[in-house]
Amino acid sequence: MPRQPRIKGEDLHYHVILRCNNKEPLFQEHGDFERLLFILYEGKRKFCFRLYNYEILNSHVHLMVSNHGDSLIDEIMHDICLKYAKDFNQRHKRSGHFWAHRYRSRIISNDQHGLACLRYQHRNALSAGIVAKPEDWPWSGYSYYMGQPNPLLEFHPSYLAVCDEEYRRRQIYKNLVYTSIPSDKISNLLEKGNGKPTCRFNRMVKQVDFLRSNLMEDYI
Image (tube, rainbow, N blue to C red; front, side):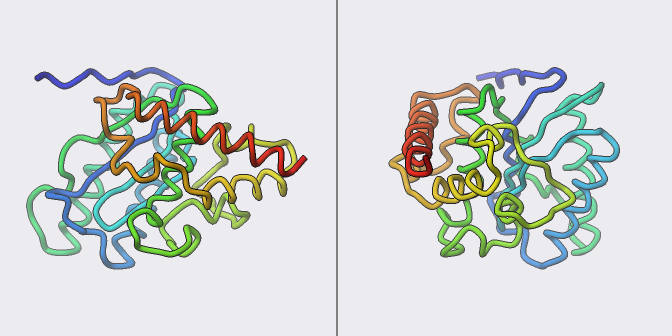
């Protein structure tokens, strides 16, 4: 079956997923994580994209980005993936593919969708059983959303839309990440459907939005 064409254009928001070749846990050393962050920093300067979150695990990476100006998502991700693969192989005296396949991406179409994606990313290390709390994983943008400076990131509009007051917004979002929903038990939920929303994915978005509404009432 032929691959589905990507949706490309200016000022689009994406949830991007990258997997290491053969699902190997290739991100191991501190420098492996740091180099990817540096390449993302260089990519931001070169292509003027916005980075709202990163979640780098041992075998895969989640990003939340938006492209602006003349650079399309394919150009951005090709540059980042190629540079990192070459850098990793040189540092580790390795040859062969680093990434399993071309990156996967899903368009973020609205605030409900964006918040659900952001929450999904921030629960990734927790769901994988790597840490007991999301803030314990250092290679994540979660701490930025909890108030720690991070020059790589800016807040996603879906997060800012939660509440006008910064402190209250942060507490609501923290509870949103910490509270489990039924969809959390479904693995690789955002990789299904060739980039198109599936019934399970739409159900997750509705569950997150319902939980957000309930948490908002607690803070009124």
